Image (cartoon, rainbow, N blue to C red; front, side, top):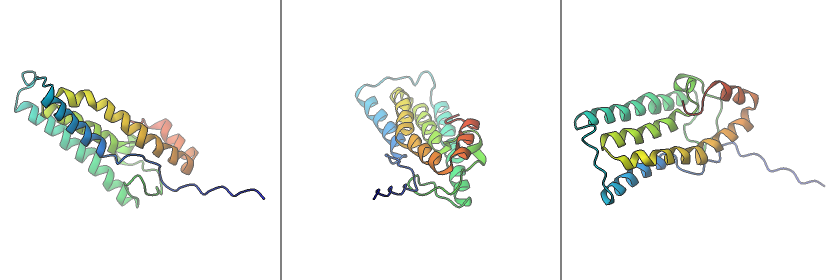
Length: 163
């Protein structure tokens, strides 16, 4: 008698707590800057860099983060990547990026790099993006392809992963 296949898990196999990636990026950048400081404040002096960095951080939180969470919750699903997805969200920022909350995290790293005039955060930001892509985005996309098939593949063809 053939063995029955194990049922597919109804959530993404995300292998990282996504907000940890930008948090570690910023904290590690600050720590490295203490050990190996590279002072570039003269390129963008205070308070200009505070305004630019602050606008990037707040804009990313509100324009991508809060808006995306609001749309997901009003659409009847959770922003938690370990919970089941009921449908493909296509409203708001999901029309321009498949991953607005992850893009928000990367932009927040850039905002802190500007705000703190910290080259190390800027250097580490691509690693943050890569980590999110490998440990969160790719598992989420595999789950969504399994669950929604051609509908998700069509969405992938019409909306870029990042921007």
